[in-house]
Image (cartoon, rainbow, N blue to C red):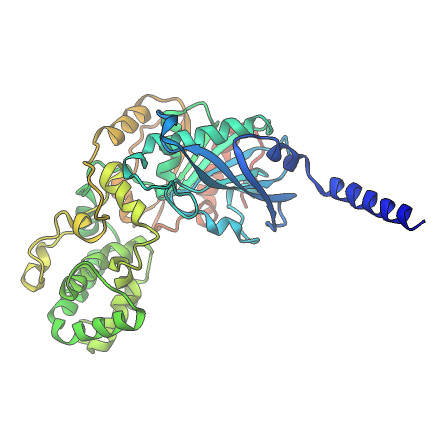
Length: 434
């Protein structure tokens, strides 16, 4: 009798476990490209959420180089629903948060696949060879995952990303235009040099008013003029935070000041909060590190983003600094090539590849792929934003006064209507934008 009870109990457990196993989980566990499958707590918008590790070639053109595991988060809404493919440009650990929900998922009532970028987070090859951290290999990663999930999901596909993630989405689209139906790219640049050159002029002439831009510059000058008093504060702050640097502390202060104007416009901070130039050095320093913290230049701070700087120096490009208004007060002689001596790993030995961004520009000029570009008017990254012609397959939205935090959710009602109308036309699906 006891044995029968045990058998019945085990049978009940097996039936219950099977019932709890989703159809998606069965699919995931049946795919040889997937090394591991873990069900995790996800946003209640979805039916189930999984963290999986996908086997990817280190070099898609030479599989003999070996493989690495790429972290991917899959949140299931329904087999026939649209699929939102998030091409994260950095680590994707945030997608493990049970509250995480991309703004586009409820807009499209979609599934959500968030892919961690190679060489970030938990998605690292061993050993590290920087030459395989390329746009082409990253796009091939995303292509492989798209092909994998098209065996399961039958709805429309949208790829998306923010900033570097938006770059990643567009580079993926340029190399595999048929992988998705629509691309939504937020605040993403298309740079044409390691120090592109357009951002400095933008900051000098475009955002805000002339009075606001002058107030920013006067603050920067006030910090540099008070170097003698502010430098010890920076040293103490760095010691408290255990920050170390590859450059002298004098140079750290210089770069914090040079970065300040980019940062204050990028993140839409209130210019009215800038203290007057004749305030105390304590107030000057407190405001400086609030907007342009030295952690950005610290060895410890860049540990999680060193791969980004490799990509910036190799293919994606970046921005430079306008030192002319501050030359008299800087300790550095020039800010040219600052990526190489502040950010790049010691073993980095690659040259900038100009053809990558030029090929994307050619793609944008000719493609009939349907792409939505979203930017903020005062975000310095708009200076190198994608330039698109007035065609039915493109929509470029620029939020007045907007920053790098510009999203569909914070657009004006008129711009939301424009986005809604365009997406519904492209996808032939209802779009829920409130």
